[in-house]
Image (tube, each protein chain N blue to C red):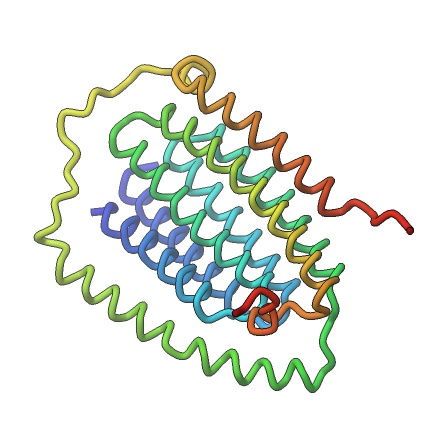
Length: 169
Length: 100
């Protein structure tokens, strides 16, 4: 595949990413919003693969598109579903609140295009490391790994405490 | 040339997340907005790794980020369910037990 085709595919993926993110915040139904969020993760996985980061992509797909969607769906199903009248009233109010989002996006895009020639994003003289992911993860960032273990333990204890059944008096 | 598209995508994701965080009144939607902000950060990290040629280090950071993200969402979802059981609502305007 030549460079131009790869760039076109990346641009299409980026457009899909933004579109599914906007859908995730705009869709009325919370379950569909959670599924749109999973779609964001799936498209982000494809972008990661295209940019040469397969390990992070696999973790993104399994954890963010799988586990987090399951957490969201269980949280939604454990909370109350509103009646049809309430939903209709909320829909009108939410559309009114989100009316400024396209305006803000257009302003941001225009500002970015105007500022682009003067922005300096060149990254020069960066030593390109020959690290493998395993070395970077287990040897270079050892403190991160310890931090992650502590965070996972804290999360597990947090969830156990939050979902603990109250003892009957 | 592709850089501008990546910067624009990150900026748009960030804008969408921040805007939804401010405009949403449902706690689950607030969590979805936080997720979208994290996606923007993930995309920027991966693209920075690609630009600098240090994809291994970028992947190590992203793996850390994903683990923190899932723990935050799991605990936050538990808190949201607890708030719902206590207040019978997910509306952020009705959660004012500590106000004043």
